[in-house]
Image (cartoon, rainbow over all chains, first blue to last red; front, side, top):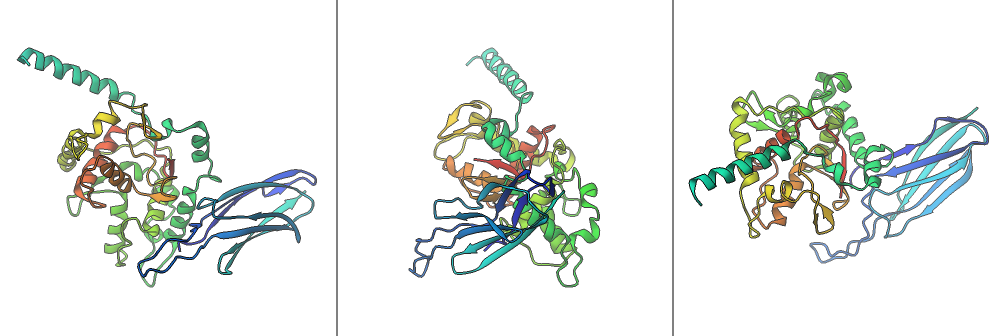
Length: 108
Length: 253
């Protein structure tokens, strides 16, 4: 698989109570599987099936993905700035692998 | 046709040629406003995922070989505008070389590392990164001296009918620009957005991959990645695109 990388775009700081937009672009082939490989075996599905985001320990966003989601999926969501803390992004891949990225939001 | 008639037709053709050359537009000019905005938005244009990979590879050192960054320090300044001058003649071999070819050559000769291979994600990443450093810089390739035969060959390729459909590039990319071909709008066929993220590919691809798709489309011979035929055509397209800004990583349909 090509290297996993994620581009997380959000403001570095925000005022308390402000709505911040978080945009997430991630590199993944999102292979729906089902093809027959050279050996005659069926290629298993391998997609990112869930993205969860926690902010200062609280879950703020969850996105369940299915085979209709394109390769290199992009998603954006908003959340309210409450306190300075980390947004932790975790993708779960078919087969059990997980990828985690962290972005810090400073609340003034 | 009489000699006078032939001369008149030639004059008309020349006129059409000059009129068209003044208004060559980038491929992105034919995209929907939504896609144009997505291309410009680094948070949403997936091509930047490859640029990021390329930037990482650029500063990485493998074994005791020097990294790209060892020679090209401060690439944001030192390599700004470099991609806009490709394809160009390689001084050592006297042959035409494009950006991907230069990266592979640097790897083989200076870093003594095995080639990455055409369309490998690593080579696409490096090419996209180096090209992205030239974003907004007008294309300024040279078609003089040793490059002239390549330019002539590229021009002949562009104007030659080929394939089972017996079509020349110029028939669509000069004659039918703005009209529809299947689901897409015909552009002037300049490569300023490449390496580009094509929705059809679900990934980044080189200009030569795009040219192979064109060749397949007219049921003509598909040449190899990095072949002289496509390099010459790439030079001709770059001359056509002179003055247009580099857009890589572009977003195309």
